[in-house]
Length: 248
Image 1 (cartoon, rainbow, N blue to C red):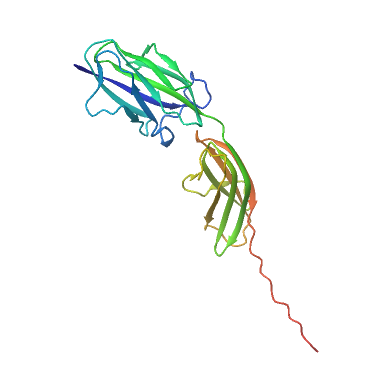
Image 2: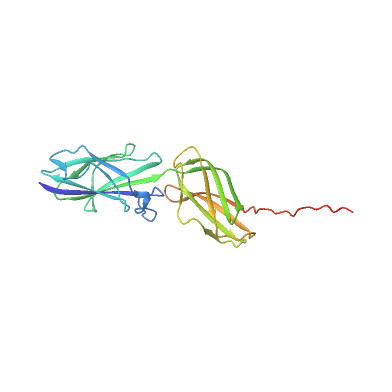
C-alpha cells in the first residue's frame, strides 16, 4: 500500500476574478483555522495512520491530508465548512500543481466531489477560492473627550454585519497626516452580527488643549476598509473661575 497526499489551499479572492492573483490573500489569520472534511472515499483508499478526517488550515492557508492507497483509481470528496459571511467562488484541483483534475463541484454546499488519485504516489492540491460578502456597519455615535491625562474615544455600533474590527487614527493640528494609534486591530465584539456593541479606547499620547481630530475605520473580513467615520474633535474639560461679589 502506497501513500498519496492532497494539500488543501484556502485562497481569499477580493475581486472575483480568478485569473488575477494580485488581490489574493493566502497568508495570515484570515486564512487560518478553516475546516475541511474528507468524505466518501472510494476504491481501496483510506486515511493514513493518525490522519483525522477533518483538518484545519495553518497561517499559510494550507492543510495537508495523507492517504494510504492500495489500488487506483481512488476518489474522495472534500467539503469546506464555509462561514455564513463568506461565499465560495470556485474549486480547482491539480496533480503536481500543474495538471488539472476533473472534479464535480457544488459551490452552494462547498463540496469538491470525485477528487481522484490515478497513481498511488500522486501529489494532489485543491484550491478553494473564497470571498467575503460586503460588510454593513451602522454607527450610532463616536466621541472624543479629555479625561485626566488622556483622550477617551468611545463609539457605539447598531449593526456589525461581516465586520472584523476597527482602526483609530489621530490627526494633530490640522496637519493632514493621520497616524494609526491602535497597535493591533480592535476586534469586533459581535462579528457578523445584526446587533451592535459599545467600545472605548484610551489615547494617552496627547497634550492638553492641542487640536486633535480622530477617525474610526471599520475593517471587513477581507481586511479591507469598508467604512470610515469622523472626524471628531476632542472636547476639552472647561474650567471656570469662581465669581465673587464684593460688598461696599
